[in-house]
Image 1 (cartoon, rainbow, N blue to C red):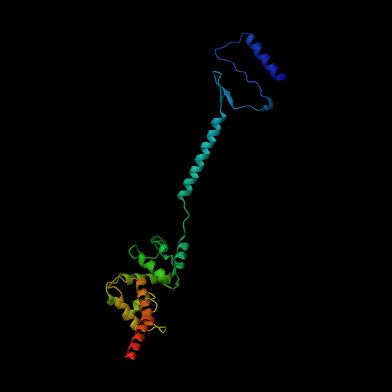
Image 2: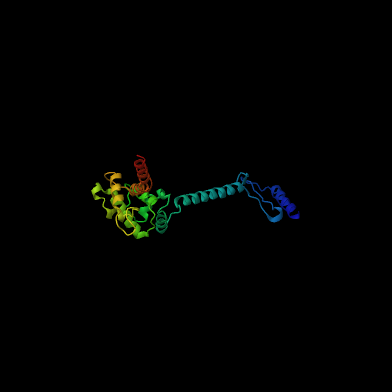
Length: 228
């Protein structure tokens, strides 16, 4: 308190002694507790509070940092590695969700035979096959599936080509061709562009008819003959 009164006495003495000038003399009085505020006095004697500017500046910088962080995250999405894509393709053999495989997946995994033209055929193979081949064997198999699709005549659809794509039910366990199944298959399919899934479906239809429909029809025929 003594210090504060002394300052005022000095100011009063200076004004009485005639110390006048064009600009106002500002005497900053000490603040109790040793802490000052964020105000400053300009030449016109106006007090200015700088604390809000500092706070706003900090907020603006914080918003800028957040914006930059969001942009960085959007520009760097998590991507699968080549090994992860290959694993997903191998696991898709015989899976119902194989249609989720995209052309980009096969490009990343370097399946050269798969293109936009035959992608649906390849997806059909994955949905239909029961084989679980490793990478090299699968790449070879898919190329053979594509070859079938590109054929333009039934005469080119040989038993050996059908064996290469792993068609089930067309060969006996000893590897010999089921000629009846093959003949019925050739009758049932279109003239060109043979899709693996459609071929497999035709073979399975043959075996269903052979074991159920045709056998039942033959039994009915025999009963009719006996009745007469």
